[in-house]
Amino acid sequence: MKNVRESNLDLLKIISILLIIMFHYAFKSGYDFTNFNINAYVIKVMYYFGELGVNLFVLISGYFMCKKKEVFF
Image (cartoon, rainbow, N blue to C red; front, top):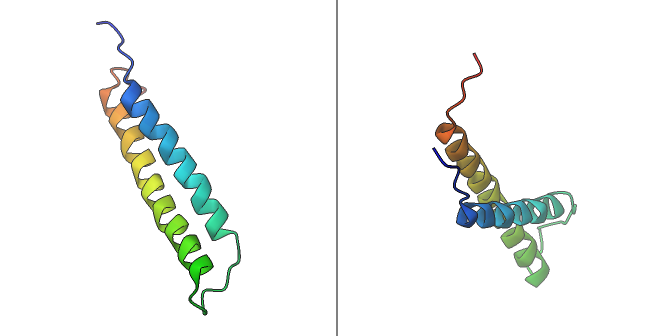
């Protein structure tokens, strides 16, 4: 069986990595969300898209692990 590179999933994985970096930036920022302004909105959007990136990365990694033919038992 010939190995075929799935570049569309690789691109989605790169995008999810960038979203995860945004999540870490928002999570570690220490921003106080008691006042609602544009900064709080931007940080919250970064936080939620970062969580989406984590879920995407796990799903794509699981997809590649299920397609693997090797067994490590």
